[in-house]
Image (tube, rainbow over all chains, first blue to last red; front, side, top):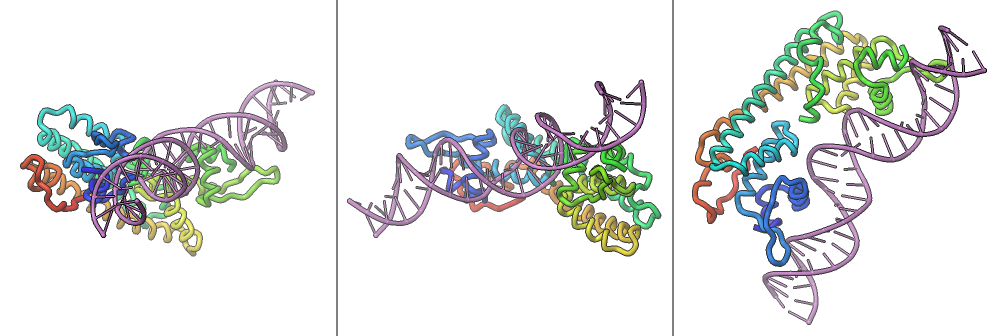
Amino acid sequence: MRIGELAAQAGMTRDTIRFYEKVGLVEGRRLPNGYRDFPPETVAWLQYIRTAQTLGFSLSEIARSGEKLRGAPDTAVALSALFEEKIQVVDARIAELAALRADLAARVGTGCPLRASGRSTAAGDHREHERHV
Amino acid sequence: MRIGELAAQAGMTRDTIRFYEKVGLVEGRRLPNGYRDFPPETVAWLQYIRTAQTLGFSLSEIARSGEKLRGAPDTAVALSALFEEKIQVVDARIAELAALRADLAARVGTGCPLRASGRSTAAGDHREHERHV
DNA sequence: CTTGACCTTGGAGCGTAGTCCACTGTTTAG
DNA sequence: CTAAACAGTGGACTACGCTCCAAGGTCAAG
């Protein structure tokens, strides 16, 4: 499959796919004329990338799962494992949000809405991840 | 309060605060010598910014809530309203994640983890794509 | 008076995730 | 044969949210 068809199937632009190739998220052979040639599974992989992105994963994180996948004997099994892993992450994220929600709810209607007391619990100190979700 | 103390109190760098001022997220007067001078509430406002960020809000979105706040007769009440609003958003986000979780869970252990149906036959299978995600 | 801590500004740079563009090469249809 | 529709490359550019730096101004203590 050439890049144009792949892009159409996966619902993204050729440029995006070329960008993904540049950063190692997808790989394909080249036809004798230099055109990229992708196996049909790439469509599914690109869709997986989109899913993972909506879960808040960065492309480099996704690339790491991709490597795991490549080294696996059974792709289907490896993918299932991956999904289970992502479910853990989603659950963690939901728990985080629930804590934030509780924190917010506690502040509604208090005399001191901004400062409150619950700073330590939820919002205090996860700096490292979560840029835009 | 000058910028250094504010930065220490709010747990961010002077540069970040200057950046926030540049984009209109915070504002302060100037002392005769040109130094910035912030009212003490700014600490709470900066902490609110951090909270809102962990909720996935962009700085420009946060700036918009800030404007609402400034135009309010009662800051505490306005803030409570803001928190209630954010709770809606958090709930929506949680629902979104729950849906993604369900989607992931449905794919775990299926013969076709990525596509959801029909992956089993090796290569010739050009089925119309169901766009999950 | 000097030192050091603090403050000012402007501008460069970074990582992420693309997007757009010009220019060139290849393939296919009429 | 030519034109359109593809494909390739490199590089510039965007937006976001900072972060760092150089060069200089201000101020209190010793």
